[in-house]
Length: 89
Image 1: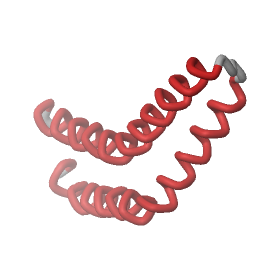
Image 2: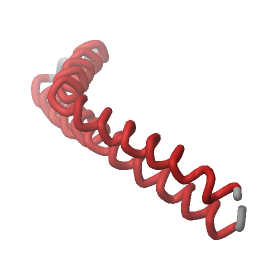
Image 3: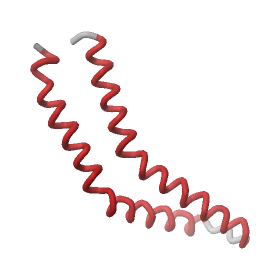
Image 4: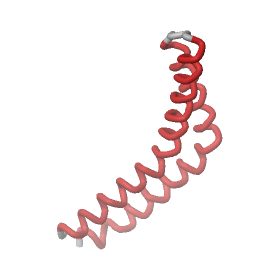
C-alpha cells in the first residue's frame, strides 16, 4: 500500500466521521448555547438542566437522522471492503 492510498483512505474515514458526527455536535452546540442563555437570564445555574436538554436534543436528532447516518456508515464499510483487493494487491 502506498502512502497516497493510505492517506486517501484516512481522509475518506475522517470525512465520514465529520458527516456522522457533525449534525449531532451542531445540535448539541445550539442547544447548549440556548440553555446557557436561558440560564444566564434566569440565574438558574443547575448543570443537570443543560445535560438533560442536550441529551434529549441528541436523542431527537438520532431518531430523525439515524437511518441516514447508519446508511452512510454501511455504504462506507461496503465500499472499503470492496477496495481491499485493489489496495492490498
